[in-house]
Image 1 (cartoon, helix red, strand yellow):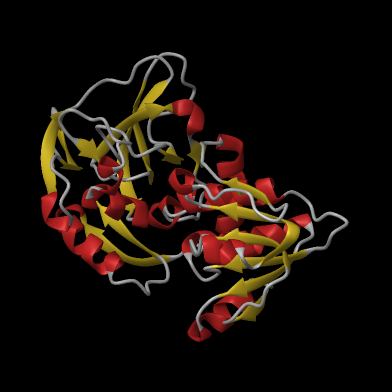
Image 2: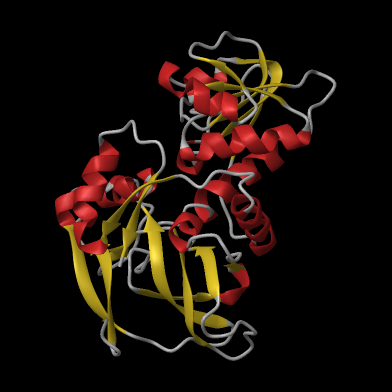
Length: 305
């Protein structure tokens, strides 16, 4: 790694994995309230594939004039701190870069970010494993917050995509709030879903008190909710209209350092599962995107700069 530049993955004209470039950018010093981090791992998410494919550009949601960065979450080690930061150099941290309209992302050797959204990674938790927690874990926890506690109408929650990265967290975390959780997933995922403490199904009937749509079924998932129930989706750019008195909400993940610290602690203790499918060098980012696009992966590909 150069002391004056660092490598990062971007797209200029988004046309899929082959349009991803690794470029060199100058190292910058962190400003007020910021830290510079050496990244140890950055997961590949479906949303990153959509950015590289040009989906959000086509929707007019990305406005970068020169390049668009890739990657949402990371774990790594503090290299330098700006004024007003009490983290020490060498501290192991994890965090989230919000949104996809950025000229930088976490697919990189280094990153400068606000310190306020970071959480310290507990001793004993591998940084690569920790990197898989910020986006999926916080998204799931914020879905559960939108669901709230079960009301008088019933406590039956269906989690679609329950073996996926977000759905698996929702299935585990929603039980803390008193929901009776059933996970919808493929037959081969039954042991994993039941291992979360949830019931399991491969085909869901209609009439659920609430649906957390980790599988992005959208209208199909909404149709499974009883009249007056709750539906929480995961696509802010495609929120469904209310129907049949259903409270329709969509999660829009945001950084919450206290929440992330809690999730990392529960992961370190083994209460929550860190799901790393494989590690891939940053130079092989296009291959990682192609592998994720094939589907069926349980756990994340994590890029290693």
